[in-house]
Length: 201
Image 1 (tube, rainbow, N blue to C red):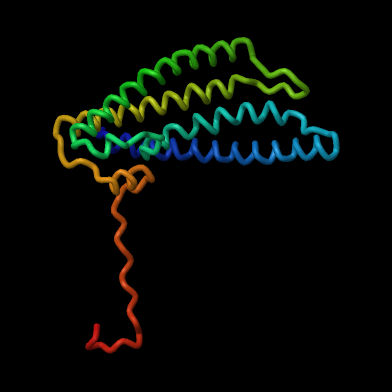
Image 2 (tube, rainbow, N blue to C red; image 1 turned 180 degrees about the vertical axis):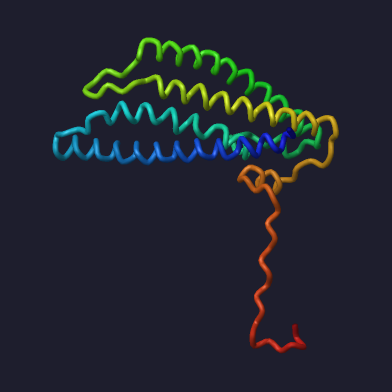
């Protein structure tokens, strides 16, 4: 199975989790608004608003990490990157991927332990509405695992660029990559003036 095929299989999964996180963001927004309005205007807060928002925040953040990495859209400082050659850019990407894999592997290790412990003790929030915490901890671990997988795919691609070299990315190519433009989109055909003479065309 090629690297491109793995990425193509991973991308719809990451996109689905991202959309699910977007739904959680919408729910949190409406709950937060309703809670503020209810508390300030009617003296009646929305039960469980804080607990639900806390749980959905994990989905919102960790659900978006993998898809953002696929698009290479995480925040980066490119002052030196844009001035480096092809192998220099690849070396920077390799270093960044290695550091990210190391950091998120440690996070996955602890997140998995916390998720298993949370399931074991049936951990839940305190308050009027008791929300189980283990689903959020599982989402954190799963989102981290998917991110590590994508980082490893990117690391292999960056190592290949480091060995083979090639052309350095221009400023425009970096911008296009960072906004997720994967292919060159052809320019639209020029509009034809219906009143223009055939000889003038």
